[in-house]
Length: 426
Image (tube, rainbow, N blue to C red; front, side):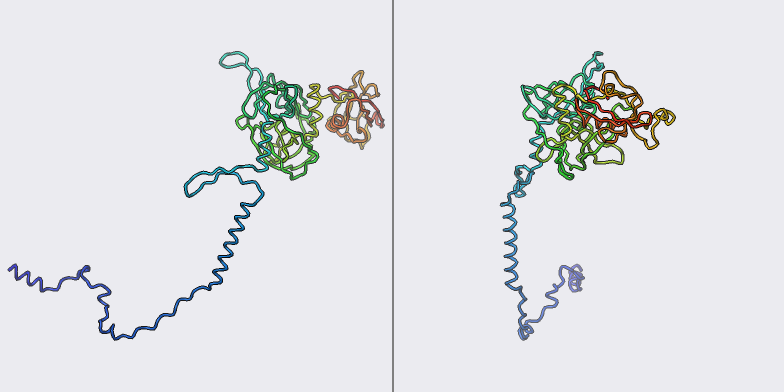
């Protein structure tokens, strides 16, 4: 029975087996005799090949471009680009020498820029004793070294009220500083230090020769010594800017500072630092920035040509000897209208400075200046307020100079000549 069934099973057609099905080549195979009798097809035409000459021209052009590129890189007189090159074949780092004009200027100048810490005595929490504490940090510039001493120019407001000064050199060395003198009107000060650790000083440039758009570099310590030696780059945005200054913080303008404008970033701590040109020369002392919310990129520096006479006087005498008349003054515009009637001024006189007191044994008393004289001109220049009077007296005149004033006295113009002496007031 088993053999029968086995034979029957062998006789039954087997179900389709994909593994045993004829291949596509076997299913559609052509009988051998048909292959033998078939006429061979004509040969296919050869494929079209590109012209030899365009390929040759492309090869020559490519080689020429490669040659020009290699010649430009290898034969250029320009200094190499700085950075680190990584070889992709073996991942080795190859150091490339860096020396651009900008980095060279900075490298030669940073040693001359220092940090200045204003120390004032305050009670220490732990010891309950008074110890010097840092009130603020600014910057300064080493400009001179002689007779074992070195001299630093900085801002007056950096060293104001300091009981001690700590100077931090670019390499981190700390030296005790001594204040030689400072001037509130120009916001300049001179500090003296031991010169044994001083390697270099900066060279003075000519701020009058600057041009708008000229590249300048600011170096200083923004936000303290943690960012010491910071470098920012910009251009001269403007020259001969006059900025109103409220020195005594009473809400009234006391002075018009003549400054350079730059878009090089200047932040708190940059005060007193260097503004240099591309020759590495000092052309300005960074002083302030305009910090209004809608303003960006307006930094201000004291032009070195204005600073030099002040620096020289501070170094030699510890103070700036300015000419004085020997009077106390008040802006005409600040006098109430009812009281202006005492002055008996013509209707066309709206601006000027009123003499409120004349001191004894002064140039003003000698020249015959009287109380309630209203000054409207000095040496032919209009005087509108105390700011313009200070600028003429402090910037244009020297001790011993003669000066001619036009005043109104009881409604009539009067001309007064005087010889100026030194002093600390008007």
